[in-house]
Image (cartoon, rainbow, N blue to C red; front, side):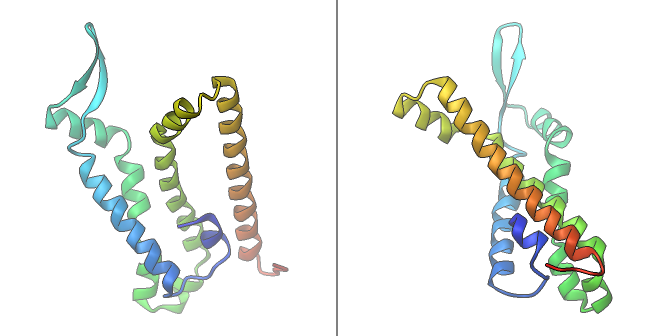
Length: 160
């Protein structure tokens, strides 16, 4: 799900929806793996990795589970499967689809690739921080523009 898809495109069965469902499948597999992935925790001996499944499950349920679960609900598929035109035209569905964009925040959670690139190219921290800030600023501006376009499409008299 991309911001432009949520903000501007109508809900219909096409290749973009199929691709979105495939990405949802990957996120579903990632969600299942999170129940078994160790996480670092502070202790009196420093940072240790938690390997007890009950604690890992409890930690995931308290942190990212709600966001992951809500973003995986396929509102587009539900509205298409119901076949009800009233649900397709329901403007609240577009607002709920914005919640799916929150799954993109999961990508920012890990920055191992950026760290490897920073080390390999010997980029100073200040320059890397500035580049990261500018990229995030551009991304947020893009999201805001798509959100603005979506609100214009939700209005009755639309010029977009």
